Figure 1 (tube, each protein chain N blue to C red):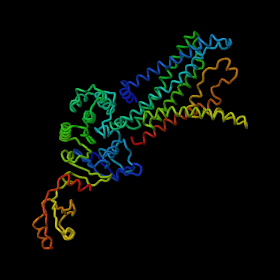
Figure 2 (figure 1 turned 30 degrees about the vertical axis):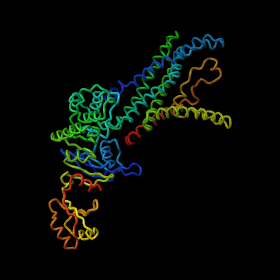
Figure 3 (figure 1 turned 180 degrees about the vertical axis):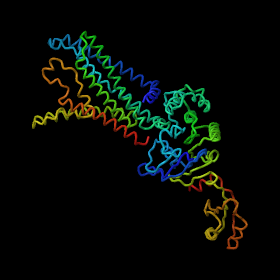
Figure 4 (figure 1 turned 45 degrees about the vertical axis):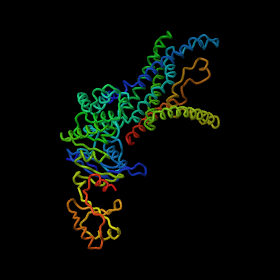
Length: 295
Length: 274
């Protein structure tokens, strides 16, 4: 069962195309990261799914059905920034959220304890720090113990301890079988908590799938020689590598993990009349893979 | 709808601006009518201008319905301002987005605001009824429902003012700008209304074409034009006492404008990015 299915969603703001025919599917029980640099369309996409923005074209389904407000009541959502009545206390704000979701108020104390705001439950929202506001928004999303949670930049404004706590919370929720859709520009965050990922850049979907598939490890061989252009020409004749790039004055050959052979490459270059001045192998990490995809 | 209203009550019951403006309006209705009542009782009734004027009491039954409705009409900007504040606050603090995210439909959100505008109009009208009855009894006259229709005109005016406030709030979204525009529009429409009235008279004098008081065909003036202060006996001698020249045209227009504001606000909210 797919919790969310996005089909060719596009969104234009005047002449700016914020989303370009994005399609992907979120399976039940996963932690799905929507990853991309600022302005890539992550929040716009979640805004459309939560009905606060209108898609220019395309459709989406929730729980394998045409999305309705009743479906949205089953989803706990933190979108962009915490949005609460500034003059009301934490507990009164949660009462409003609970009433809209048609849940009882019995959950509120529990949720305030989970996000460590119980002691400040009667303080007006306007007196909260950014981190406390964020925690209250996460608390509101947890009301009614929903099976699906949507978090847009959930660790925004939190201190390192708060960030760690939220990540632990997300993992705990995931372990309980909840489906979590999380937008983030933080690679580290996605790497640590997500099982699946969709990568957006300037409104386009670059890749989607399991984290393991999308961020498949590879071997990167760095090479340098006095005659770089000749080196580039002879390397291009090789046929077992994935990519040839120039990075920081060196040439880099990408191979599937475990398939690069330095001795063979060195011999091949020597036979072609090139003496390498630099030859090194390194493993691609999550960050380099992301940069590779987005650049 | 009951559930939606309960949630709206949770939102506003602890909001200082709501409490202050509500109290200010309720007290203001009594005070402004008392001021007119006192001026008539203590100044005009003792005037040496003639027996006709001295015998005129705008707060006697059945004048009281008309006088209170007309006088209270000046304060209708207060509930309108409150509505603008309540709706634009939802945009400013993005709580309207949160309500939708939590599971309200867009239609539920805008409809409950429209219902609140109607409730404000009903409460304002009830206040007028109570105040008019109070001053009528204070005047020592016998209770009468004659001219109670003016309370209905007041209700229509309150509906129009409130619904226009909802529309402006939904269109402008920023509290200060919305309130500013609301008042600027009221002023501009009044000016246009005067111009149109002059044009109506000129047209009638020129070729006899009678289009009525065209100023009263504009949105706010259509609701406003139905409400007049009771003519004192001297004034009645000199002019027609009907509130407008084309009563049914104006009342139909007022209702049509109200419906237009409802449809426009709803359409805008249902289709816009929040």
